[in-house]
Image (cartoon, rainbow, N blue to C red):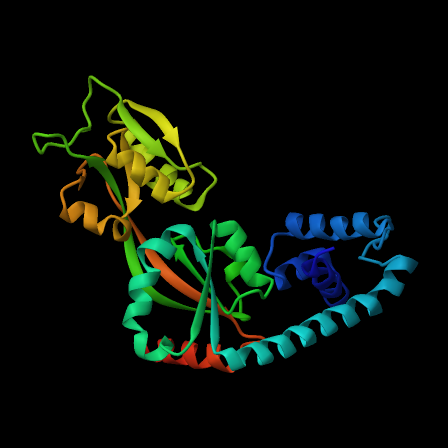
Length: 299
């Protein structure tokens, strides 16, 4: 059982159709339908009479609706109580993408030292999908993640606010040889060895959409290693295994020490904004003060 299934069911009752309820829940209609079906499978009964249009609940569905509303109210009430209690410790809980936890967050918090010096900052690093899911479930005050031209659908809507707190570049890099020259350079006669992200990961989608198609039209390429973590690809790039697109904030020291260098055309960089998100509901006093400070800082 998941809380979002109960919220979906309540939204369906309030909106009267799958399409309107899906829009209200900021998900696609197929995804919304799958979640309603998952709730029915967990309960072991049909809640929707799919032989009737417009959307009609079964007898079990009508009976379950009051319970679902009660459970959603109770769960959020309990969370507000717990957040209020936890606020005495002055904690700030942040869900963050793995790469940002290493490359951006420590320096960002250092610049905010006057604001956070007496606060406990709890950081939970994860891949983007899991971080978003956990954030939307209300398990943290904030979500720190990269954003691109394609907005993350679940992070849009009036129930969520965001602030751009930084920028980064996803840059193609290679290690340097003993002669100070790049170990790998784009040439027509030899395939360029690439260290890649899975295509379904956030950084993988960026690279495969913005960089790879143009590159493949000009030179041959060869994938030699795949890892969802930028830190993993960085380690391999430093050891001379191939070319990797890495967040520039992650490799500042390696670029300065000339352990890595950024390659030029036909390879190119991708700009990424760094966004901090928060849900309107159930924010502790400490988190609200932190957010208001940032909103003034980055206005």
